[in-house]
Image (cartoon, rainbow, N blue to C red):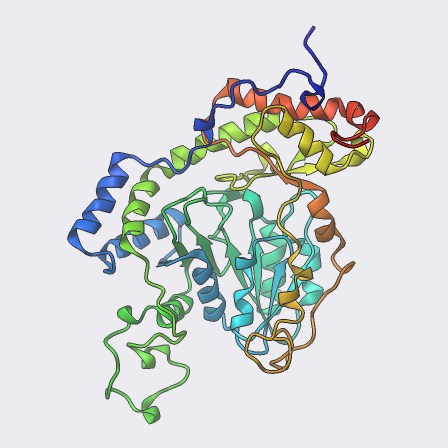
Length: 441
């Protein structure tokens, strides 16, 4: 009979062959290297011809009319906000559980962030917590397909349509995911995302925006791509010639004062990665579903993945999270659970995911522009700041979720060992509840 003692107490480890290669990402081949070297050797790192081709191909893959590539995902999201009309005194609605780059840029536009609670089973924005937050200055709803799980877009789009509010999709965690058969990023009015080296679609420090709206596209270009709007306008126009609503009147100087151009080494790599991404992400999907299939029904742990027959998928499963249900295993604290799972042969496993942003001081007291008042209220907007206890689900998530191994290859034997580590600890929680933590007493 196998040793069921937990490894943290001297039992055999569940993971005996960790196989670090199944976590290696991105997959870089000689084709990627050759494409990048062509850009370097031609000295065209700051040109745009390769980027234009990448944008065209990415837009086609996403099923969108326009795509604009950026130096990083944070700037693509800032630009999308501005293109949707977010400005001083306005508001953006955003889930509290996400990375800061989903919304903090709103402050630099003079806008406030009105945080919404999240769904306890998906970790995405709770559609039922959006409509009552919409006010006269609400310009956009930022939806984040967090940790690879698509948001429930149908009710969100219905609310946005009712109130004439733009929907921005942050797809940084979910490249290639589907919502009821539709690619995430093709449902809202505009989508933006990171393509940095840690993402499932990874091409370096990069980002991209996609939309079908020509006005949004035009505004994004005018905001940070002076080289696409014409030469510097020295002497070409005078203030009296300018229609403030016509962004093309400002040709040659970016309206945001930003240079958003992407280094073409990233564009070149992006074109190669896009060719193989569907098949690579399909393998990630097989691997991650294999892992969770092995854990189906295990007490205390649950996946955020959608039902198999829903037409909704997890795409690249970036930063995939597991849900923790301590009430099913005697109330065992998540930190102790993670410590025990890590001892089964993993390098690390930490409790918690992203910190609830609505509690961070930057959204309460930061005076970014030196106005003598917090930026969240300095431009005359209503006070939407929220303290402890206001978003109960979001505030509980750090104790109810954790990041799971993110497999890039479908290796059944190795994946089975990792799944066994979680199962072993969950099903042997009594051992942890009976004994003092290591080093105590």
